[in-house]
Length: 232
Image 1: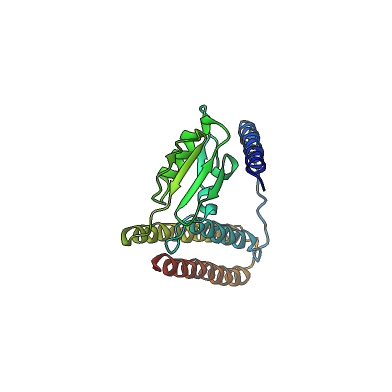
Image 2 (image 1 turned 90 degrees about the vertical axis):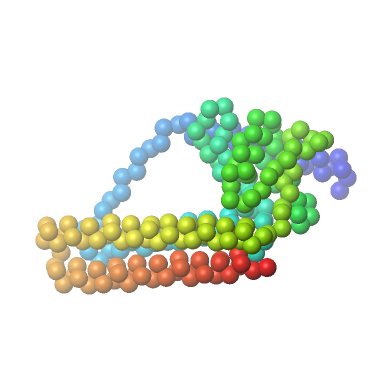
């Protein structure tokens, strides 16, 4: 592919990201519709707990994917950073919605943005992340940031493990919160006598087993991630 073709391709993708960012900002300015959940009167219905655990585990996996594993940083990690839109907007979007992230060898990543207004918020997002990265403006392209990838150190690995542990604790808390919501519903049904005590007792046992299983999954994910983070 010629240099002109590559340049045209990159420019086209950046214009698409520019339009996408504007569409996200416009959508964010619209009033959000409230969603009212329907609480089941079936004591054996543990779908809310199952959904809560699944969401907690999914979010934990997403949090782990944004951390530096074994000294490596993929473009996906940088693309997943949340960026505050400029011009007074309160909207936060993924960096990938605003810019194109391109790997340049093992120790350099470039970030191409469609307009100058996105440079500062993208730089801030990278600097404020837990990746220990420092974006630098390109000397020849005003719309390009160069991001050197430093080799991992003992300190950076330990710092990453700390962030992973915090994410694990957040996930475990989310699982417990889901359990508490179901527990309160069962207590309310017991007070109103809308379910038999034996049925509620059985469901409570199932609830505890699901909660324990969810917490165990989160802890196992952490241990696997920790080994990867500590790997040289």
